[in-house]
Length: 585
Length: 42
Image (cartoon, rainbow over all chains, first blue to last red):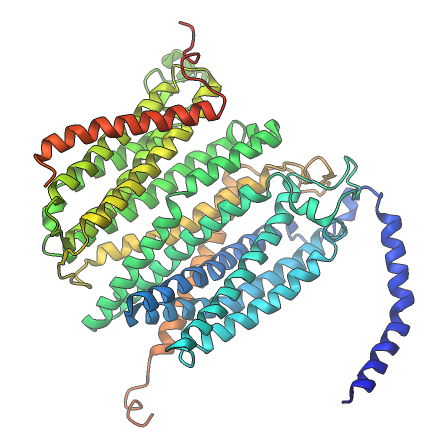
């Protein structure tokens, strides 16, 4: 088609639609100072006996699980691909491709559930969706366009793997991967803006009238804490799911070579999961501190009100993750002949991890009968009560993280024999770092009991920094200490089946945890669609009982795990060839 | 190299104590919480 003809078509289009566009702009200008809608109970569509909230809740949570997975995996796929270029080890490249293969199977499901979520929101909460469109305007179209771009880059990245595998072409391939990750992260940040706006609205006046720009609404007080928290959580979650896949394949495979490959994949995935997990409690702490700073009422609803008990369940789930990850790492010591030398330290690490777990799940306030209160002499237990407050919990979680890192370090050391002359002295510097760092974490915890609240909260920061100093400091020292070290043979695949079940526990516990914490985050708005701006007047505008919430969260978790097992099975099916057809092919 | 490992350990302990003290003090003061005026009245 000639250019002149194209221009003529464009002119006709403008003439045809310009009046409508102008009217739409005028409508928008008039609507600028209109407050948020105030739907009555009758404005919420009732479809049979279907609970709109449960449908939207399930679709949103399922979409988040899948989206977190398909956004995170390309992040560490490209990091693994880069490792293959740096080290020249092709195994990394193959593993990165395999990571992406699992993502491909899950991607269409993500889009499908996302479409289902949008549809259910439009059906059950039309007024809220109308208001959100008014606030975020063109950003929603940008989101849709980015989603299209994400699909294109994802497919190009995966299907061009072999075509762009060597030489300079590899860099083109990684550039496509970089673009894919940039688009993916932008998508997540935009979606985060919408949910954080619902918690801490900005760019609107107290009636909900739009007074600011889309950017002001986007950059609301909780946006960045949520961005950081979800970014780290996605990496941890993606690593855990891929680890679950590796465990599934390890158990299913009979060929020792393939078992060795999936053992290595499981180890790497677990490493990624823990890498994302270690800073996660600190990001969560920041998010909660910002929630308190934005609205004390909201903070108290979370940590001191009806939702507080869910944080005890959170502690149980995080403790499960820590125990499973550590157990897997300890099992990994049997992969090397020198591993037995380090196994003697495992019992001490176990004592700290289990002890930390018990402290973390100790509640401050107990649910007691009048008789029990009388027997106890008050509502708080004399000995265990003090363990229910934050200084004890902060100390526990920091020590658990330090010990988890130590488990990693032991395996790493078991696979290398240092050759530098100062190896023993260097080890003593690392031991001294652990001793002083741990003492500092415990001391800062005790300090929290003898100071006013503001100091107690402030002292949690040195605890975090101590944990990070131990980790970064000992990594740096070990890098120099193990320079030119003699590698010890690692027998990949020399693992028990039990260890693989521990690896499989991680995605289950992570999924449950995310479902639980997502429910808490969303429930903080109580009976508001948009906190303090737009009231939820639907028949289901109350916080459900903990039991009901737990049932829904568990059902969603089971549903998601069923989908994941299907995805794993699908990936394995793709590799299966009919007997007798290999030669013909 | 670096002499007796236990001597190194003791020196390292002292150095790490100094490092962590500096970190703690800087962080608390950075938050506007000077150490010294912090203990609760008994």
